[in-house]
Length: 388
Image (cartoon, rainbow, N blue to C red; front, side):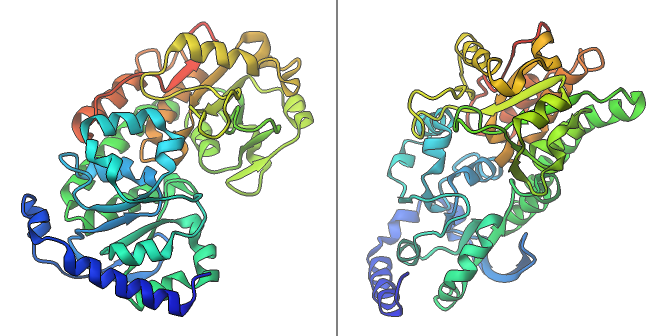
């Protein structure tokens, strides 16, 4: 843990570095010269925080927060970012490559390592002197134990907690509004929220009207990242997506967002669909059974990788194996403002007749066109069933 003396030395270094920064460095971006004023907001942890807005220097406690930052500020999402965690590079290399192609300066952005619920590098944070630090809701306890919030507050560095992962259906819209407000992008945040609601209604309205039978569904979480069985979701995140898409999540016995059930439970529940969340994880598990889903993924490769999951012992004799209703979907839908795409895709798999005209790819392509600085490339899902 960083000592108070180390903090003081770091703070002095920070002041020296800031004093040496050339003022011309920011001259080309008018938004960075806007007058800031104190603004008090409530973050997703329920904390009231005062900061100077619109923020000009943000430190991203998780790299995948770029998904929303870029949606709110597509012309130059890096204009206000001074440092980020490296998780996007390893967890979503195809998307990182897309952003790097459009914004090559991303390669030089100061970075630090760590996990979703871990501490940030406090000395690096002090040196960057951000207007705000954005942290995942899962990091509350770790930061509380280390007193990081208090240490940063003493140096006038405010922290906001946001959430796409723990309770995404409850917290994503407030997170979008929160960032829209501190970035001075309130109108755009409301446009994003309206788009999401319309996309969700394309599923919810049909299910409410037709009331179809809900098939039993098992979601295998982080398929191929670990050999463990059977990692899944409780009543939140992808577990909630399944319910919103007209299915019954057999992992709803898990008491928290993430957890594990036994292979015996899967076999007894006899799911009619198995959904594997996966991604290109060669940075974590070289040669693993993961499915390299994501922008630009080759469907011949992803389908072949999905075939392996049918052979798992936990799926012996289940209904999904007999009908080949095995599906793979991009894992990062669990941690982004894009979960409406996952809900649409799941609904199309569970109820192909009801949603024959629904096109999740077109929905996501339209979101890219309207809100993101990168082009849409298909590759976020794959299925062994006859009807994709």
